[in-house]
Image 1 (cartoon, each protein chain N blue to C red):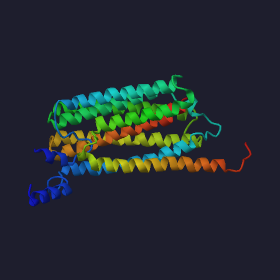
Image 2: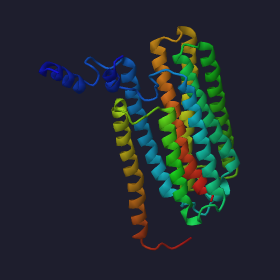
Image 3: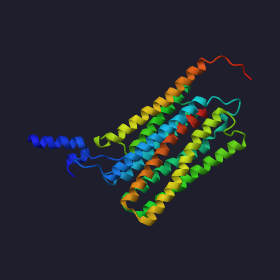
Length: 207
Length: 121
């Protein structure tokens, strides 16, 4: 190996990938990854608020007598399976199989919508029972944290519908695939946040 | 694609670069592990399988395990050199999350300890 070869090799190692910029797709997904991490940092503040305030029930209902783990289990299953179908949908899109992609996207949407339905009926039941966000610091922080996650899921559903419309109109072009990849990252990240909600709020609270 | 180009190729999170039949399998294995962790945490929280004071620790361990499963099998974050940027960003995010949550709990617990006793209503 001559000095020149070693020099070229070193330059290429420094640049990362044999010279030249990374593909657009890598850059887009990396940027979106940074956004997702910042979103998770935002969630961590809400988690911290809940952890600090969860004992301050002001004589009102506590976590133990409010939460129905049966519903929570259904919500968890919905989100987990929608994450799975989202991944499979992304796979079909990358393999340019529009029909399978649309099928999996429909599953993802239906499971996400089922999650939201259960969550909204749970919230409505709590408010009817006099355990609304104004009742105690515990309930304020509960509705803020879980409601923020629900708002993200709602946004995700709108975004999914918008992306599917793009696939229908424009087809599985690279630019549409990049947007799909961002959506799929977002959806998987929501499932990861839900693991935190499930553990900290529901499973630890219901004991 | 020669060997070392692949090694130094950047990889984006959530994207499986080499397409193969293993992809479907990856998601399915991930789903199976995630279901096991979820059911495990429900069992731990609802039964006395674990020593009761240790239950929160058990739940946290299961939650971290499941987050790891999601990161590896759904978001395809590996330990290869092509993933360095993504892992580095993740590590920074985890640091901030840790600081915010433990910092808040620590400070507020300290404030509660030093609070003057208040008359109860």
